[in-house]
Amino acid sequence: MKKFYDDVMTNAPGVKSLLGPEGRFPQRLVSLQSGDSDVGMMGLLEYLNASFTVMPFVRKPGSVYPVMVEFAVRDIEATVRKVVGMGQPIIGGPFYGQSNGGAYGVVTFLDPNGVLILATDCAAGRRNPAPAASAIRKVVIPTARNRAEPSAQLFHEALEMNVLRDETFGSAQTAALLDLEETAVARVITLRQRREDHGMVSFMEVLEPELDIKPFVKRDNYPYEAILVFVVDDIDRVLSKALPLGARLMGRRTYEVPGRGMVEGAMFTDSNGVVIDLTRWLGSQTG
Image (cartoon, rainbow, N blue to C red; front, side, top):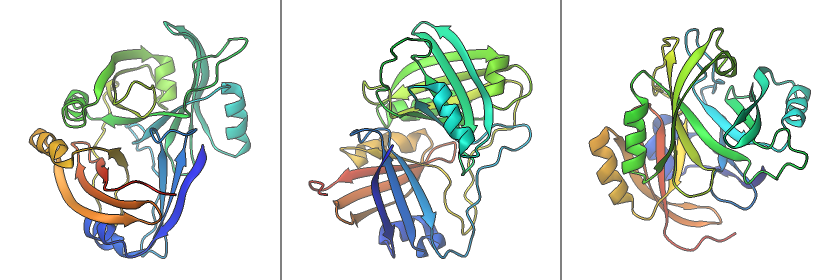
């Protein structure tokens, strides 16, 4: 991934009004981009001179890692070598197998922030593997029992994402990839907004074993831990569909992104405590 944006936000009125007391502190935002696509980007937000310390994600006993991000890679073994060389722990795999799409390889590992990364090589075993269409494919949100379907409904109806797959996986391999000690059965509902197989969202409900998966909870004077950003044409239309489905509006604002233009925005939380940041550009972007 290449760096797309790197700047420090100080006294940003939109951030301060929506995030509360922690919005007082300067924040460095680094956005990373896969190729030339604005879909499937990743942002890292670092709080500077804050009165709190942002802690990495930790897998609690009897649960799974709270955030997973899946990447398409060209060479699963090269990815493992690089990850190990950087001192990051391998969680599960690499595993190899066959699916309807052909041979594949998969491995999971942790990044320095405790995010579980799932690297998938859908061209594993091919003599001349095709280049990956996009580095980042999707964000996977684990949900409590019976919460995957309502979560998918909100993203389908309000954000107009279409259900791409609704699959159930069950194996010791699935458990190993999730850092569980026994065979696991998981239902995964995957949605996408465009035709490309990147920029997707999946909701994962672990059916077996029974796990204690709780929504993200906002702590006082501490930032929200997971934010998904969507660029939309009509914020009012999205909110009119999301709020009846259990979304909680945090607020709306208009602000300037330095060097890129004015933005109308709104934020709400879904039933998993994930913050949805709606963005509508008010003019042509520059820079």
